[in-house]
Image (tube, rainbow, N blue to C red; front, top):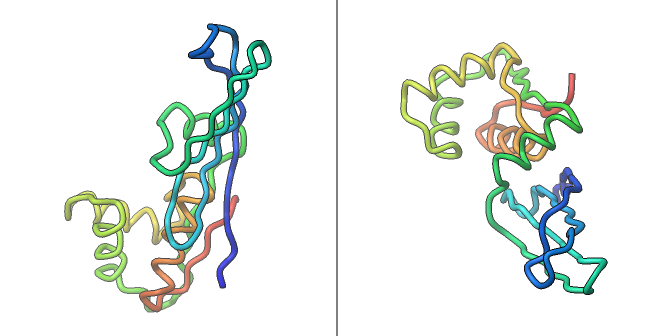
Length: 139
């Protein structure tokens, strides 16, 4: 069984109930082979609380995670790693076109492709499923 990988950030928002400041905790998690974004929010003024699970991480929160935790990089260490296999996986997982997949594959091969730790671990696992030795880590 593979380990759950996650990163979290705290941020404020406006309470929908009373207009006061909400305390929010957002977590990007890789579990069961899927990336998801979970948020818990609580208003200290009126007690309103909510939890929203699933979905995609908002760009602003992703940027915040990268700023707070630093980017993780995807490394391929298979000496005979097939660029075609990497491109195929990237197209399937990222939903990109062939030209973009080729450019991203080059960045993966040089250790220059970065994102949040859960995102990079997700891609590393997909590459390992294809028989390519890959790891996700912070430099």
